[in-house]
Length: 76
Image (cartoon, rainbow, N blue to C red; front, side):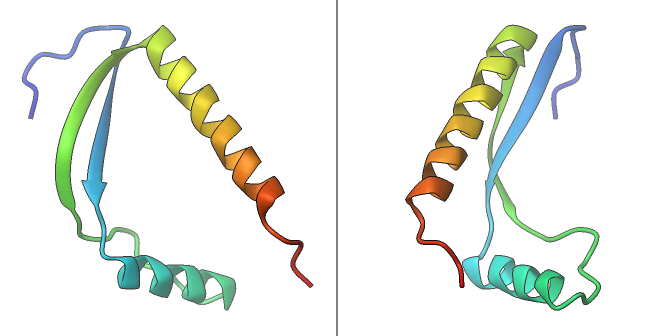
């Protein structure tokens, strides 16, 4: 845990989740069932970013997700 937090800094935690757990949660959510409020995982690293860098990361991730969605075949 970082003891000092600077104004204008965003902390992003990256971690690992078991794929089976994630798939189970997705299935439950799609079925309209209650999903857990939290899930266990393993923290891989924590990155401190300034606000501009965090905004650029968010923009790049959104562009990536949009490209993946477009590449997927339409659901029937």
